[in-house]
Length: 462
Image (cartoon, rainbow, N blue to C red):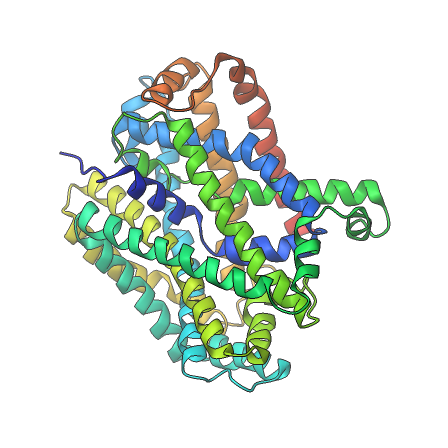
């Protein structure tokens, strides 16, 4: 008999925990900084509604209707002699590839939390913090291995217990703690001297900022902002490899799935926006560039914490919050890997955890060593790493093309079909999929997803 989640809150927090990760609390703020502030946030919310929610609804419906993991769900729903189920194996592979580098980045967060708590970052200037990241994180092979292995082992230990007593219980506590810490950090940042200027930059649309994005050309700036917001809104929910479908398979049928997709998206967006409330007031308060890009978390913010009263406390809280955000995704994706393994090989949860833990400890090593012992491997030329290759495969190939397959399967008559999708999705109380949405989901949504795929490939190699 298939396990079920104990509560609706558990489902929402688990699903949101899968979506809420480094993409929210790291990538979203620096993209807002690079793409002109408040206007980016508006476009992001718009595309989250018109793209993220429909695809998330489809993933949930495929899981709930099949009561299987992604590697087996197509067999329950596809027409006879069709080949849709091949995508299930790519989805399973995508989860492994994601964890090959994501556990490494989660290890960075744990490293920073421990280092901040023990005072290793205290008193360092900007050059000192940058050297710490390069020498004590990326180039420190034993430390990288230890913290990545800790992340993996913790993840599989949590998942080895039953669904309700392990994953659901721990995720509830961790996610509620994460939300509480975020609110405390945001309030502290907002009331810093000069913090209001950061809020204005973050939340108020500014046409001049758009012009700067387009190098003086307003139209080009708007197009760049729209494409950036569309990409971030699409990728923030981790759609396309079945990591959300698995939680749909643990659901009963008392709630409609579009309503649940909206709830998860709202919580995901709350975390993304609140992370900006933490970062931008602090940046403006200390005269730090808000558009410094990826180094914002690992180099810029530790400098700010070093200058704050009680900086060790605020820095420790920030990086434990970052660690919780990373671990929530690790737990959720590990659950997907475990479910695929139990469905495919008919083994117990504990045995699946043990086997996959050993496998993941090996699979993470190319990324972990890619910044030190294997730094000579540069898949995309000088300056690239093994992490870049793994991230490219997931972000630019598996997620967009997987989402496209989910949409086509749910809407075309050669797949599951729109009527069956709508019937499953609308069962229970809450928001419903309407007939007027069918042309959009069938014809427009696939085109938008393909555009994201094509633009992503073009921009990456450009």
